Image 1 (cartoon, rainbow, N blue to C red):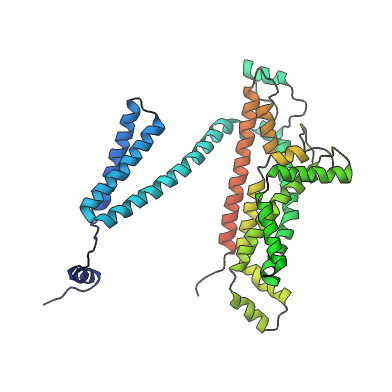
Image 2: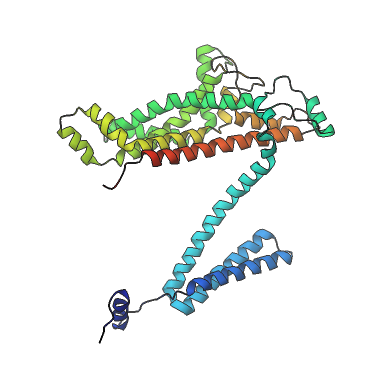
Length: 377
């Protein structure tokens, strides 16, 4: 006579014990959730057809879904499983609420800017010499759009690149000091406090700092790309320090101890053991810090100014960036009576900026995956 063994037998034995109650979910309960979700969707569509505001209809349908899930699962599998399914529904709802604004933003930017952003003229022309007459002809007669963001794209890359060259060494070396040389003490506490303060300062303050510094050094009203790079570096340093510190902390102490036990100097242990182990996290943190400041507008308006033509020298005269270009095209169209061409340029520049941020984030993920420590034998 065979006896039942395995998880099912253990669960049956537990269920037969006095005072023990198991909530066993049958495999078919997943279908119930899909049915309830479908009914809630139909109810929401019906409310919209009856004239209810779409946002109110979605909220009512979602609340009805949660209530129906609780009732259905309570009758099938018990209270614990019902509460668990409601919690899952709440988490899913929070995810959808967070995702809707992002998808709406991406759809708006892509739909309005794609036609102009990927045109050769927009990517190779500047605004130098462009007046409102061209925009009037564009909207009235359907002429090609004249004027692009070539100078703003290059200005964004130059200013952000200089800010990265300034911020990364300072941030990484500060993190090394906090983790390897002075993990505790008054100086480390002071540095961490100042880093936290820098993380929370408004970006316009960084722009005013750079403008004031350049006014003292080179005269009042001096604006150029270097001032903008200084302003962005003030915003980047704190992010690089925090990210790098956390990445260095997760390096196992056994690696440090093993290197020091072999008689390796501490600086060489940091350079050859700690940094290579944490390089994926460091690279990801730096890339995310770049993505955080590449779209800043306020500090660049103050410290860099606005240029209609191409300027590749960050130490001489105003430059332009995609964020500032977008701001000016929205707020100060070339022809106030024919705003559409300027708005098309603004949406196209915004799309290019979004694409740069997406590329940076994807690069951070690839770097983290490529340089991650290999596991296994």
